[in-house]
Image 1 (cartoon, one colour):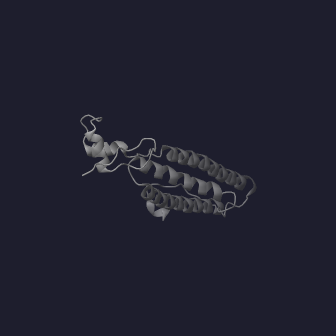
Image 2 (image 1 turned 90 degrees about the vertical axis):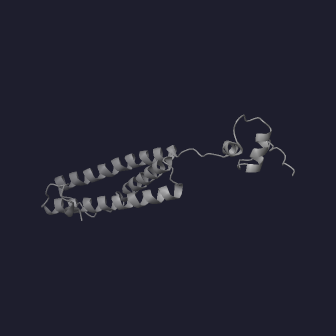
Length: 166
């Protein structure tokens, strides 16, 4: 049986080598006490955890969240001073920051799950579902509270009683 030629380092092929090539490298004696499977892992490309994705998602969520919060505060101030309408909340000025908030949270959670070993697709799918459900519930609750304020029957929010949220 002929052993394959040693891999050429000039080509710099990013693909991992085969187990047979790892055994050939082991026979050369350059790698001390490593076995062929451990040599194969030495050549396997490992991608870096997506810290950048999680960081950008966090920054995007914070900036868009602050923008959305400020817009809601301005709307409440306008209602208190001039009785401007609070609803509809889905205006062209408030939807982009809210969408950016949801997208930022999705990227942050997805990147964080990838750090802990989830695949990219599964992590982003789980984070998208979580973000959409949480964002949708937050939007519905905010509209209910603004409706109560506008109608004049606003009452304190009791977070221990979850029946009022649904």
